[in-house]
Structures are given as C-alpha cells and as structure tokens.
Image 1 (cartoon, helix red, strand yellow):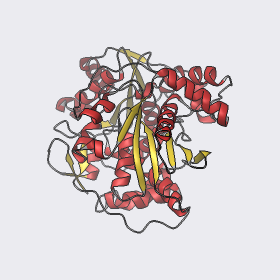
Image 2 (tube, rainbow, N blue to C red):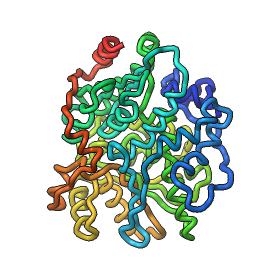
Image 3 (tube, rainbow, N blue to C red):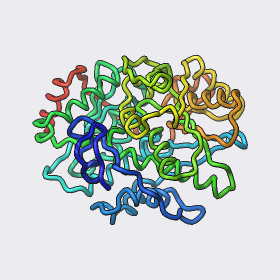
Image 4 (cartoon, helix red, strand yellow):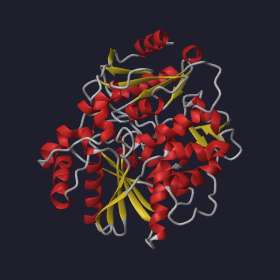
Amino acid sequence: MRCVSTRGGGAVSLTEAIAAGLAPDGGLFLPTQLPQLGAPPTAGASLPIVASWLLRPFFEGEALAGALDEICARAFTFAAPLRWLEPDTGLLELFHGPTAAFKDFGARFLAECTARIPSGSATRTVLVATSGDTGAAVAAAFHRRPGFRVLVLYPDGRVSARQAHQLGAFGDNVHAFRVAGSFDDCQRMVKAAFLDRELQSRATLLSANSISLGRLLPQMAYYAHAALHAREQGLAPLSFVVPTGNLGNAFACLLAREVGLPIGRVVLATNANRVLIDFLSTGRYEPRASVATLANAMDVGAPSNVERLRALFPDASRVVEADAVDDTTIRATIASIWQRHGKAICPHTACGVAVLERLRGAGAQGTWLVAATAHPAKFDTIVEPATGAECPPPAPLAALLARPAHATPLEPSFEALRRALLELA
C-alpha cells in the first residue's frame, strides 16, 4: 500500500512509512486510498484473526505481508472484552495488556513490525513522548529487544505516581526522562528530533507515538472485533464513545468505520482541554497550552492526529462528535458507576461514561460502548477516594511497581533532547 504525507509529500510504501514514523515534510502518513475488506472471518473469530483479516489489505504487496499473521498473533496475546453495564451500554475493556492500558495493542504490533524491517544501523532509537500510558506500553514492547533502545519523555508531575514509576522501572535498554514542562513540550521536542536530518542519521530514530501508522492501524482491530461480534449477535451497528487526547485511538475507530465495519456514531470524550471540541464546532484548529486534569493522559493542547482528521475528512464535524468533561464530573462519575454497578473505572473512562450519559439524556438510542482505556489501579489516588474501596493493581502492573525506578530530569528544549540522544548514541 502506498502512503503519502498529509502535507502533500511523495508516496512511500507502508513499510517505509512505519520505519520513518514522521514524513520528511513534517506531515503524518496516510494511505493514498483506503482498501475494501473481503468476507469477514468466521463467527467467533479471535482478536488476532480479526486483526490479521482487517490489516491484510493494508499490507498487500508489502515486505511484511507474509509475516502479518505471526505479527498479529504475537501482538494481540490478551483480550479486549466487553463488560455490560446495561443491556445496551457497555465498556470495551482495552487495559488487559502488560502495562494496563490500550496503548499495549499498538505498541506491541509496532515492535513486531519494526523488528522485521531491516536497518542500516546496529541499534535503532525508539523515541516517544507520553502523557502517561504510551511510554510504558512502548517500553514494555521494546524492553530487552535486541537492536533497539527506547527514550521516553514524560511531563514531570503531570502523570500519576504509578504511571511515573512504571516509566522508570524498566531499565536495561529503556531510558526515562522527566521533562520540566507539559506533554505538548515533550511532543514538540520529539517531532523536532525527527526533522533533524543529522540527528536522524546518527541516532537512527524510530517513532512510537500515534503519529506512527504502525501504532495507529492495529488499533482498528479491537473496534472491528467488537463490531463483528455485535453483528453476529444480531445487534444494530455499535456506536462508540472514545476518550481521547492525541486523537489516535478515536481516529482508528473512524478508520475502522470508513473501511466498512458496522459502526454507528463515533463521539470523542475530552477533559477540560477543549481543542478538539472547538475545532469541530468552529472548523478552526487552534492549539493552545494544555491544562492539567484528573484524566492526565488526555491533557493535550495540540493533538497530532487532527492533521490526519482534516486530511481524510475535510468536513470533520459531519463524521465525528465531541463533548468535554470537567474534574468534578469525572469524580462524580467514578463514584456513580461504583455505586450502581460495583465497577471501578479510570478517570479517562469516566469522561467517556459521562459523555454517554449526556447523549442518553438527549435521546441517543441503540447499543453503545465506551472505550475503557486504562486500568483504574493506575490512578489509585483518584479512584480509591471516589469509590471508598481499594483498587489493587493487576499482576503485571504490581510487578513493575515492585521494581526500583529512575528517570533523568530534562529541560523542555529540543537542544536538551538532542544532547541526550547523542550521548546515548
């Protein structure tokens, strides 16, 4: 499949796009055209089988095509189960991977792909900015993988304590940097690194943020799996509320619908960072400084994937909706879901549930799922006071929390990152 930059750059293969991450002109890669899907797999197909079926048209003619089944089997080793709160309302739980967040799916797929892409360098540097969950997922996917080192940048003091510990607990080939700034600073620094040709040649950089198609495309799989399962059960097309910050997860849901999956409405749930809300209501994209909230992984003031959204859907407001949730509502929703269903949810999932409750109040019909993006135990200092109950971490998270952790302080400037990269290279 051929891919082009959102800014009009020349076409490359999907394999080349995955290897490059960011397009040379600073844009994001998109397929030149979306493929048509063949007949779906047999009823009850597993997530890896659905993923391979869904992604095969994208990888047709690619060097990785012959390994796609194996890549999916090795990446999707954990489930994305549905948990019903009501007969027509449920959670799509995406946090059962090794770092307890939905980012595990895309990060593991990307790692399996890039390990099979030849490189002229003995060691490639995976560079990632994180608002909380991406960094740990990427670190886990590449941890101790020969031929790779990982640099994770996160905003110091703006991720949860358990998220910060996760990021610094891997060691070995994973290096965590706590940046004295916001996630937007981290993201800006990373993008600048990929546009520095000399640095790219000396450090052999690989992107692992949702700017990478290698992370974005596989995220379609769990929406496809849920949608096909619903159709097998005789349900009308599912609608989704997707908590979002950088827009990668929600954009994957839109792509899944665009290639023909039975998906109804797609609604974005954001926190107090309203850039996406304002963009959809006015048509003007105006990045701004992010605001710290309880749903920290969504604290993004310049969502990268807006560029893809605008390129693929010139009138984006016709294909996607959005609503925002404040911290008071987040706390109240966590408490309410616990009281009514005995179910603990993370602050990001609470944003999605709160938005869905508003939609229901406005008359929304049909079957809806909220993407439950992270395990609530990653946010124990928020969830436990709201529920009045202990929220123990799942075993993989507990194992990381038991390890010592270290993160190196870093100033929020590209020059500081450049020095760190060259020292490691």
